[in-house]
Image (cartoon, rainbow, N blue to C red; front, side, top):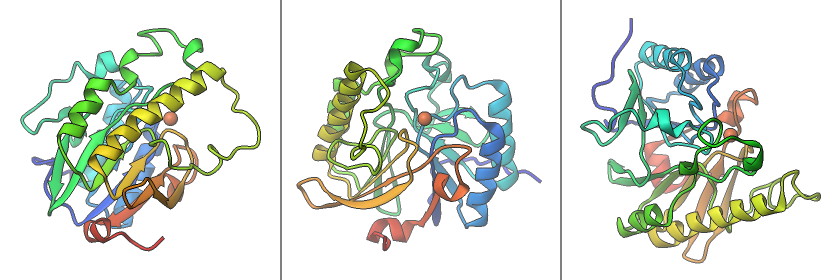
Length: 261
Ligand SMILES: [Fe+2]
């Protein structure tokens, strides 16, 4: 039995957030059934989802989502093939349906579940950019533009930010306190910090109380102070790590009130 979801934005009771899957269909299928076992009725994926959006990957993810009868909503990461992704038209819900039960949340997309306001804003800077080939393994669309940031801010407050990058000011364990310099060119590290500043500008504008992100392949959960009140920041690990680090499940009620750390 499979179940095709007609309304990807129907209000769920329990949400699974998922870290980078990197076009790994085998892992995605495991992660989807893990999320369902934990009670999820929707998966919100935090980017670096489909890379090239190959037929094989989309078929694997879609088959698992159809089998479990739940929608998968994803923001874009920095390693998506934006030429392929943007070829999927934006449909009636304002989302790109890339396969049955699988939808892309475009940058700046907003929605509400039972009064909880969500803002989707994917994208990040690739620190290995010099080793990548434009429009083959790197796309300039990976970065949030100033225009996209301005539009996101103009949309007003949101409760939950669904992002790929992490805003500046949130100290990611093992990344922002590392003892040795990261193994990437300093200029690229600087650009990635600038990208985090762009996202921080958005956060300062929309003042979410919860930020979810991927990208750093680190699972953590903390309360940060970004100057306007407490912000719960949660990062997730990637495919081939541990299911418990790649998937985090919260109820919609818990998302509203903030669950205990
Ligand atoms: Fe990634």
